[in-house]
Image (cartoon, rainbow, N blue to C red; front, side, top):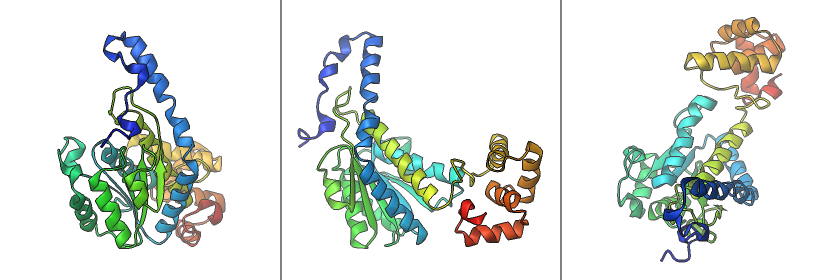
Length: 294
């Protein structure tokens, strides 16, 4: 059943992997890894459509929900948990679901991915609505957990995106938008934590980052909504204010305090000479976009 999958084929360049010297193997592996970005590039039109779908959903208070098993599930979960500190989103706005539950992130839960019902149950537990977008991630494109989840999402009217590493994937046939990054055979046959995992990470980075730009979480190329949860990030927040306004360190520090540790509001205060309350209201009217607010 796996013979037709690119992700399961043997890589002709590594047939004698166990005989290679360390450097020789690493050179081949590095060359194979270098192909991944170009494989992702071929799917940019589909990725762009997916980003636009997510942006529209977020404007309606919809959520971005990643759904996957094994490495695929871990990559989705990793992207989800990085959104609150980077973009100051609520943890419920971007969700990562993995077959077997959160404990499966650390220790594999064998067999969990083989259940259509588990994917449905996890989405039900998270109260999936027709405003949400579900991104089903499976390197093979045929994981039952993901198939079940995507079918359920479609049934209730949620938007669906598939992310796989095989052309004509099963999950691609279900989803509204199919992203299929074909990286070729892995250096270690069938080990999709390698090139497949790398490409999935790149795509998830694009989906979350570009959609956050699209809802006003970024000014220029500055992450103006980041959470200042430690000393390093407080200093980064000041630097962001300085870069955005061309002010001094002292001014950035002063206005960050006035803005209650919110760099975005501090930037608007400095650029418009508004008070905290006025800057907050101006941003609200501008739907969070600094450029429109100023």
